[in-house]
Length: 106
Image 1 (cartoon, rainbow, N blue to C red):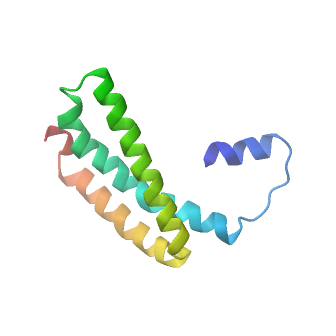
Image 2 (tube, helix red, strand yellow):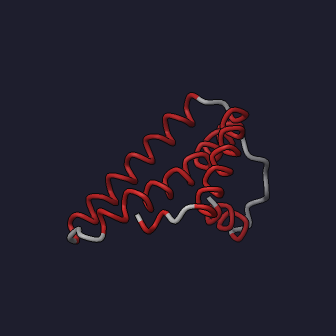
């Protein structure tokens, strides 16, 4: 998202406000980013320590597909305001977990 914005600015395209559809998709991504990172750290750590190269590739592709589908469904049906409220809650929980728990040790 950030690279897309930087590319548009550097290519000379004038800045414009985001459309409601873009805000809905970006807020959906904002909700699922800490969920995806937490799942990768918590679930991926134990699996990836003993996985082969093919297992790592399958895990990565499956998790990206699931995250993409979750963002697509969320962005399609959930309004931006609800996504913003849920994103604040999810980010607070993620920061609290990162501060108080050692997820990588599991």
